[in-house]
Image (cartoon, rainbow, N blue to C red; front, side):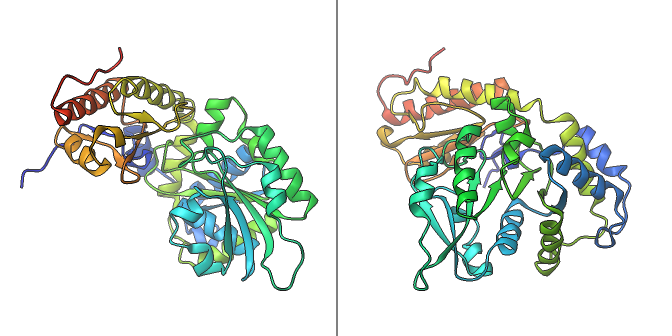
Length: 359
């Protein structure tokens, strides 16, 4: 079987690869034993993220999923309830970790593009009743991935935070694409993070690192997070080689996220003119573009296969829905090539006329 060369990979921003400058920083990193607190690069990364997010302390973890699960394990006891949007990563993409590890139940809310309201939270908080789960934690995902890359407005976060304080609940941020929200909104990361008891920053998505996330919060919270990090096998040794990538990314790859957002908007504009393609949602805020192919007569998997034959890779989210994610390895010409390939695939499938791409 002939292997297809992928020229444009829009499956996820996790597909981004370390840049030459990042690789040099990793190769030259000062290292030590992380578990003994002696890795200078890891310590520096944690200090940088804690300062960036306005928190007392932080801990470096192998993945964003572990950041979420460690936070849940610290905050929740078995039988307690978490409130989150129905599209949240902790519901859709973490192997039911909250239930399997913490014994916690997640109560989904039907938000608007991944953003729920303070009123929805208030209505979902259970009264004290020995027969019902005890509401404990509210989780917000910034940006909302399956909400279409939607930025949680600071005003909405503050409104939810007010309800959580009123009811003595814990507020956690899944910050997988927090820096995308920062660049798109102009709101500093510390302002977004201020209302939260715990918050983490992903390094392996738009920031372009090969691995890792950093979880931040109060010093006591991080002390307990370290205990769970060790229990789950997340403690490392010379992790400074990986932490150096995060330091480099925070110094060099944050402002450039604006390019990814511009390229996502350009891609959306191009494909919006293809017959049978529907953007979902129609408004593109960051680097995620979801679209339906239902009206083309093809399934998302069929479209993905035909695109791959043309060197373009776009993710399948559901039977009729696809997701394209821009990142530092895809430039303007790349998204234009991807849009043109999609138009060709749809036109060939329809067999009559040409699907037009708006110019």
